[in-house]
Image 1 (cartoon, helix red, strand yellow):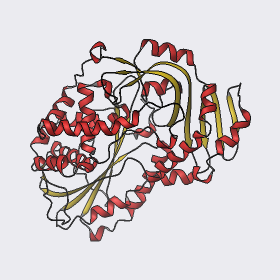
Image 2 (cartoon, rainbow, N blue to C red):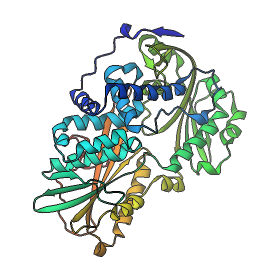
Image 3 (tube, rainbow, N blue to C red):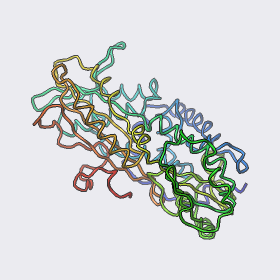
Image 4 (cartoon, one colour):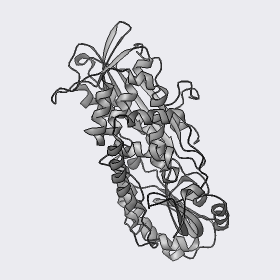
Length: 457
């Protein structure tokens, strides 16, 4: 395989001072040797994900998601590191979730550094609780938010397994105990659905590839109710396919077919660096940006590597065949199952409160399943909160933070956020004037429309 030395590639110098500043601050808690070892460990793990294989020699059920589960904070710092120092290794989809957080830390770094107990929290995160990065970073974002609203904030030290809130905030004549809960990225149902889709496509991927076919599939029933060979049984008698358009429409599924323009892709990769498994490659194959919609693709192509090693540095030099599939399921049962409630996080949080001070809960969620799922989830959340027994709790406010990251082909990341402030009481004034954790306070909220109801960036 051809390999291009990194010094011969004119990658622009990364110059976001806020991201660089926060990354250097986190790095100051680690020795150089410790970081180099962790970085090597991470690269050894993700290198396996990008080994060269013949088409169809690896089951599609394995997927191509790059993630490190045992050292999550190390993985996040690695993403920042390579974006700054080795951009040819950067992973766009995961990076779009992470870089905006470090951008916010950099903007408000002096505020963060002055929060009581922050050094202990960061050391715990880096040395003892590496897999809990999402939860602990969310705590830090919450602490910054309260400090920006004029409160004196401190992390509450943990006491030998005793359940305590995460933060205490004092100001404006009140004391607040604050508990932070962070939902996982996606529901178990969504991951199972993805695995099922990959099994389905494994039976037809070769036929799709041979004809450069692009499918847009909408299931009207839950995927788990269908056999793995469902698409094969529907489509195999139709190959070879000549005409575009809706080729199947019934009570279970609608399938729309078009063809990928291989000459246009060939011309683009001839003049541009296009990374394998990247937003740009997805756009070229899918003929549009594919954020916020499940997408599977495959290609028969020639590749080259930039720089040394085999760490997420594979690029496309030419392409002969490709296929792509957009997936969506509009079955009510599927939407309901993916629309996770906050009931579990809420009742766990309530157990943390034992003091006479007013209690606040912040819950953070990522929104990757589309507008229908998020509207359903919000209705679930409102119903759950209406059932809280206000007589036997000091809880007064719940802040729900909905986060959405995007990976456009022409930008490192785009980030959006919606915050819902809910109270089981009537006519209470919220203690926070500024509610956004990550996006700029003066960001375009479009009259407070939830971000899942706005057009994609």
